[in-house]
Length: 306
Length: 306
Image (cartoon, rainbow over all chains, first blue to last red; front, side, top):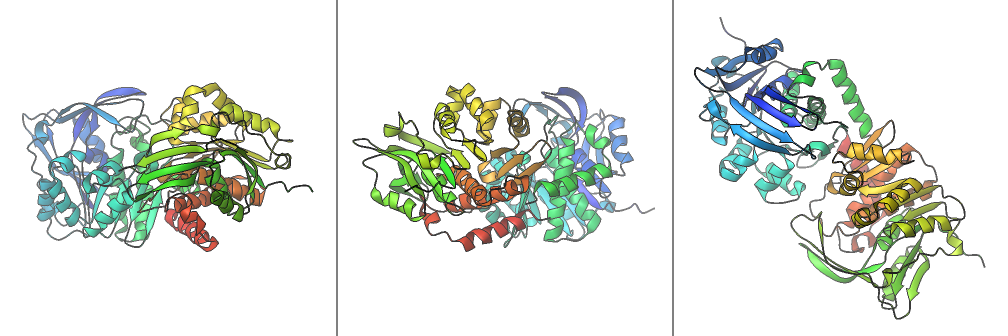
């Protein structure tokens, strides 16, 4: 039997998080960029994950994803392996994560391998794996996807800048947050950084600014998405991944690449990310309804009206 | 002969600035919060300044303001006094000013005194003088103005917090930038800070975020104004003052206080401030046309459209 091709392929980490914020703490919570991104994408389409876990990974976490229609064929489970673990703390400024401990474990020598049924997917999100692996995954696709979006991390910008720039060039869109864009292009000015991204064969540049929203640039236009005003940020872990996943999920459901779609997609992505910050791990997204999403999308319209 | 009452009264500093940025430098340039705010306001209405200068203040600077229809009756010129001087440097991050030297000179013991013809003005902007002086000026008005807006400075938040809070309470709106709001209310979350402002008898709270735009809060609504994307920030000196002055000038021309007016006013204020950053001192505003203002206002609409 031929297995279905996911609407969207998501490469990234899966892990177990211990997180403490001014609002409380969780231990062994479902974490990792692929978990957050795929869950966020599942509000719009059916993603498939490529990741690696150890045999200590709780079955309940996998079932949570499966129940959302997320394809798990691409998750490699290493016998006698230990799952990636992250221990983080947020204090006064909840926008800044303090990493207390990272155990890469099975993630250390992860070589993502796309299952056959993933290789024809039209949408590809290259999450936070090393840039060489991102490029390798891209080469495993049978044809160039309709939209490839990559994420990056300050760690790789510092240690593997040339490879990161190669990913930016090969992907259609390289998502970055403001500090990453400043670091990668050695300028404080985000507009200058965006111009550099556009020079690297990118039609669109997106820069995420956390509480300040997100920016979209093309050669001839600019869009500024507001941040949704959250009085209580319970746990911001995974918000960037939710943003990316929701954006990709939105595109995979519409299959049309245009600036108008990007603007709407960025707002949906911001909305999902804002809900994610309202609870620990995926707790808030688990009880999120489509009505709530549409209502907040409508609020975002009112927030920028003048 | 009775002298005309200005549409708007602006209290603040007038000074001579030496400024260096990555784009060049100027010496003895017209500076000070009242200079910037009144020039920005003059695109919308006829303000009057209350400030103090020394007898070293160049006549050309005064003529520049006078030519814009700005009322100078409230400027006290101290014989044998030296004008306030500021020497600032902007480096990699042009959003951060490094003060190399401040000479208060005649500003040190400035007691603002409103000329008779100012005391019936319906709009009052209390710029960066000590909070006691702001309260004193307010008490000199014959009636409570239709709209009183105050500015604040981190220096006074640190040294005279209770007095600053009294100004916030007595003014209709206390303008703050994000770091000042966080400092004053001891929270990193700007939404929480805005709630605290609203608790202090304010119907509206405005928080300026520099390159990230500005936020408006009421008890039941929220507005986010985008930052205008400037690739080259030549000199950001006075942008906050231009924002305040343009906002007040806009209100003084419309004389109607409503949330819709605030939203539009904040966009005009952002537009004028963005132009100001394109040149040293008031050089860009001196050649700014109404067509350019309206064009950029229209661009701001497209920037947030989705």
